[in-house]
Image (tube, rainbow over all chains, first blue to last red; front, side):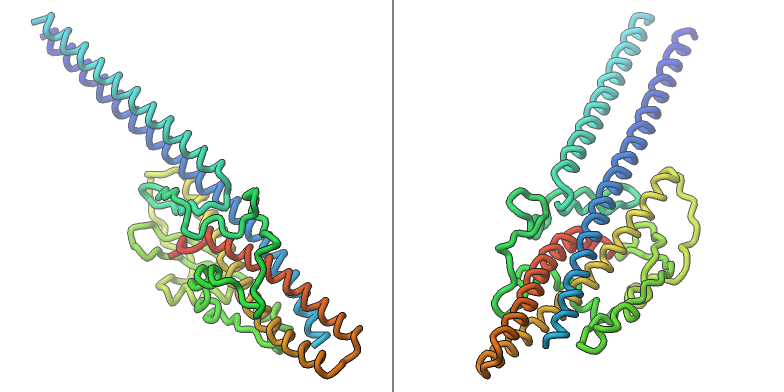
Length: 69
Length: 261
């Protein structure tokens, strides 16, 4: 009887460890995804800002061209 | 019997600890690899499209990745990369921008000398919220704010006006869902900027070609040299700005292409 109890306790401990491990893995995976999205967002924003500035320069040059031609 | 049970328990515990350490090591490895990739520069095409189950991390650089970078890889366009003599952007850009060409025409960005002057009013900056659906159907839809010009194109792809229906998905935290929404909104803004800039680029290229022809005619008609020089300077300035814009569009297109499909 005592031996059966021991087996049950060990089994329960293993289940608990397995479940904790899965949870940890899931949370870590989520953190990675959040970081990826943040870094890509920042990169996109920087690129879009540069693009907007340069587009304005081209627009200004086009306006000058309109005056000359 | 007792000895056997103790032995089995020991073996089980050992197996469990091996599994745990292997899992932790793998996790660390993934994290480090991810950080390394992030440090490799932001202009690389990461295809970091988040999904419900997993971010698809295809870290192979896109076939156009790195185009337009300078020698230091800073994303600064190289001055030698200019438009050709006819003022047409390079073939590579044309290939890259193919995805956008029909869309910006659809968005109404088809500039002429007349409507270019009213571009600020034609480019509707007011935003509407739509529920964006992904083509593969397996990914949760996302609320994004789009400009009036872009809304029609989205609705044609099956998106609907207004917020997406609320779905309780406990697989990810609230923070994850917020970041995901921000991510797709940034992507949308970037895409709209690329489309608008591409339309301006095409118009500028067209104007450059016309201006060069006019200059040639003026030279043949012996117009005052000072006038010709002044006009030539304006053309040169536009040419330089167009060249830089072309490179920047290439970089931005690499980041946004196909991510909102």
